[in-house]
Length: 356
Image 1 (cartoon, rainbow, N blue to C red):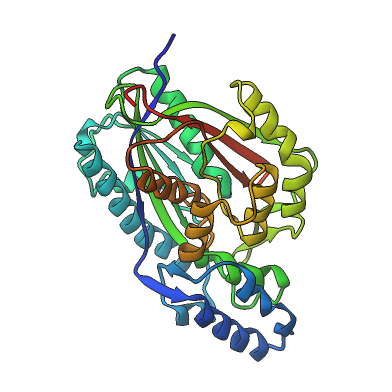
Image 2 (tube, rainbow, N blue to C red):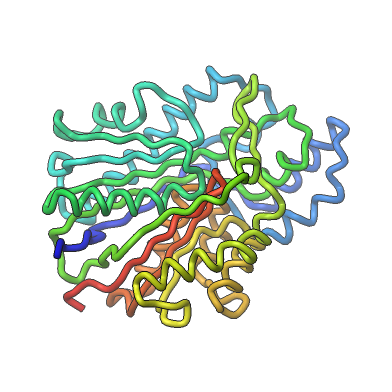
């Protein structure tokens, strides 16, 4: 039987601008009211989102101007590369490895466009080998961190001993469009922040390192309008349905149950979770389907509170918090779920290393 992939290191990175939720609320009120949009009925969303602050690659005042594809793409490359370098260097240092020891690199990002892709440009900043195998992935949205871990594990297991570096980057706030006077655009200002994460996987390494025991994906038919981006003249427009928490409660539960059953598990047997906290209502729905008391998904709520919804890296931030809290290692099966465009789900199961 092939050895499972191990999570050898996991790091996170945040951009420099720290923006309190109250400041976002005040800014949004002035911005939308100044353009005649009736934002008053939506202001309570800022207070109920479970978010205290977020990080942004750009200062708050930038968001009030008109910005097109050329400017957004340049900022995505510049700020995105800075965050990716920070996350990658921290991850490799944590693992005690050099960039040249990485065999494969997967980049997951859905909030900007660059050709060459950012992973190729990162090779000019860090001394990766010239024969590094790269795989940039676009379009997974919030599901990208969990799906990326699953695919990185499969790649590591297919080539035992090789080292796979997963990078996730999202500059969600960069896609705010100042002239978009819609409820969806308002809610985007309630939720979204910027961030990056990096994970190093291999079948070889510390016996105590967490093992990736299985992964899966699921797409619900006729659901393409639930979540995603629309391509507009001045950037990407946000698409997400207010029904996502209800979809989790009504449709995600059986998908989760079938996935866990394939591994001989039920929700009751899970020791931990590291799910993507899309928003306060999403976390509450996850607590319900996982059979937890309200407020019990502590790490999900903590990441949401201090970082907001960063899309694909967010679940990796939660996993990093969990690993920090469980200093002696995971106590048992750990489940991760993230939902993304499609409408789809990415599911992942981790467990304690064999050395524990």
